[in-house]
Length: 317
Length: 133
Image (cartoon, helix red, strand yellow):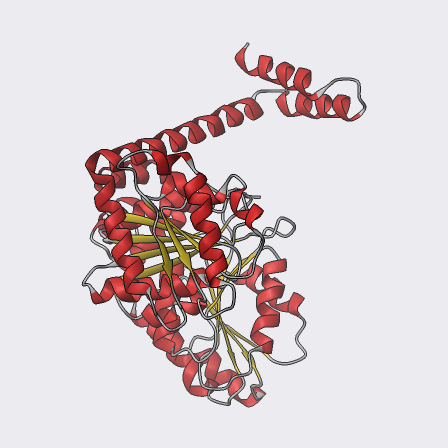
């Protein structure tokens, strides 16, 4: 298939073309920037929802059940599920689909697994590209499942319109909850595995953290609801879908525009900084100079800041 | 590490047997060889496997069967791919499969069959040498 064909067919939601286009963007194959420019005007319609939480908290299972609920409501769903890439081999075992395979023969659901490929923020560099392809293809809702996160993988907050943060009982004490980072990005809190002991305590901790946050004092600001689920059985999932809808409604045009401006800024800056880095590394003698400077830093003959300044001067001169 | 193409492999177990040790060993070995492995789990129908292979845009579909139903299930996967006009995906099979069945499987579009005792390195080399894009 020629690139123009792939783009045209992807926009018509032809599964093979959608899938191939995601690969083209992920692998940065010939013409990917052109293809991106073609699809981008068609994006901005889907409700982009991020699902994040610690490993084993039930993200995949919740995504599976959320997709089911959205389908029941007559909406189409795209899923991007991210799992870690090994820093050693560069390989990855992508197992999120395992819990979502029931949807595979439903052409209203598209599921794509991705490895982080060296990124540390809980997503991969190509995740937003995949989301844009699914959005442009006309999926009504795009669910992004991040890798299992710890405390600071907050990249999802700049990509999603609505962030669902999953917690489970029995993971840590209340200081964990007060720490900065991940707790600050939830638009919705889901306490999954609600049959486990300690549910009340987790809820109380989340509530305390939310009350302590500045946002809760501002009149008319969104107060993140705390919902209880049993993703395994689907209990409470319809309420999560309702709450995601309410959050989108609360954002309104203005709030949504603000979030999307934030995303646009983050992405554009990132691509620009990659370009700058690329420009630097392509300069004749740059990688040798970088190596020489690194050796000087390691030998304590230069400090990292002066070395970086020297490298920077090489670019701008 | 994040530049360029990565080999993507769907590891799937069609049929009703619940023995996925072999599939998991292969999945891990391919991961350690730098490939992205999508694992779909047990008891997948050929239709489900093909649909997942398309959504994941994989280079390879690796099928595992220990139930003796490979003679029906493996060719069915190859046939479905062909029906959808997909000719750039390598289909390989593994499991307890009698050598007498090899010719028929290969004629049906299974590129290679690996049986117990094959080293994972052999499978990795085979994939690297034979992927179609």
